[in-house]
Length: 222
Image (cartoon, rainbow, N blue to C red; front, top):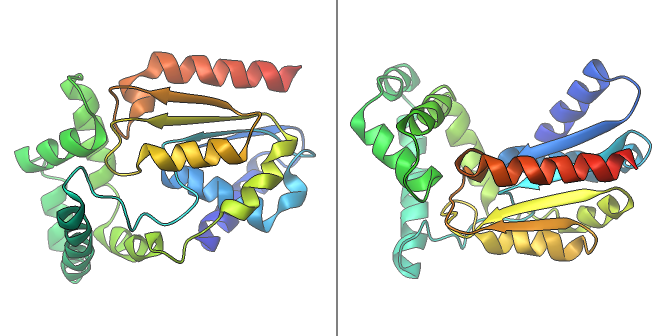
């Protein structure tokens, strides 16, 4: 997780070496933002003048149930991690299969990225993005979401700049309670909770997400 923050910092340094920056992060992207804030707090206020966090968490996801009854959900999470680690031993074969656009990949993406009837093209786009992430990368990152992950202390450093947080009540991957927790640590943040939406709320309810981003940019501009 530290490496994610370092990589994001390298991008900021290379692409915008001076001037104000607004950082927006969805899911693991939000964790990358939090990691950067932890490691380089001097950026906040001087360089980073606004932060937008969507469907993300500042701590481990070991209690996420994937929309299943609690005991079964916890067991399933452990089984998924073990299965992905096993699949990563044959990455070439597995990745070719994942990119074959199977009905199974579509169904899994539909279930865990969205929560209501959405355009099939959005589901296919999300499935392609998932498939383009090598299985070895997925296997390496999954163990990071355990109980040792805790970036909540660094959130307080973000209070110096306008912030916005978006969560979704139907998110099966990052429970909405995690978004509420981040918002509670940022009392002046613009918090929006999207009802009837899943993990890809920025696509499923792009109208709400876009409006929140516009409000954030307006606060930054003033």
